[in-house]
Length: 118
Length: 111
Image 1 (cartoon, helix red, strand yellow):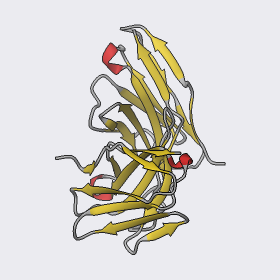
Image 2 (cartoon, one colour):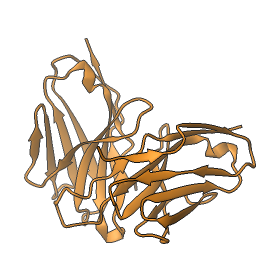
Image 3 (cartoon, helix red, strand yellow):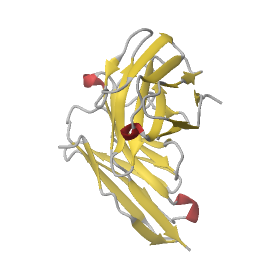
């Protein structure tokens, strides 16, 4: 069964701490994404990556950075955690776009990492 | 204006009912469309892709109307296990293969 695995399901950190969220996929997908999900706001894109060592800002990149040193791994870094970064973080991956209506460019999510910053 | 808009609900329906969700998207160049299901405190999971000709999977039917830029999901003979949040997702490869999400429609099926 193909998977997107997030290293931590629940984390509690203090304000100012550096936080690493790790994500690994075993589907050989080119594209990887980090989202956060908050009640009433839905999923918001933080960063995404189309290839190794490549990254693009999403809608809310402030306060975050990412790293993609290997194709299967995409890490989200909070350099100095703040209370407004308390959220559910979801990693996802998808194959490269193959064509209109192919239905193959499906997004697969990890189980999520629920971060609480005190 | 949001890329994808959905009625957040909640929809509370009795078992066996038929329920329909609609979703509108703003970018006419969008190319792929999906419905995802998300259970409480879980990750979203693909329910079905939506094709231009419409498609059916058991009790679930998805339709795409490109002219009006909306997507629909019909659930027939609702089960208690259908209770979840349903997310409309649009993929736009013109903006770099990004996925745009509605905020979700909450469904509760009541015994």
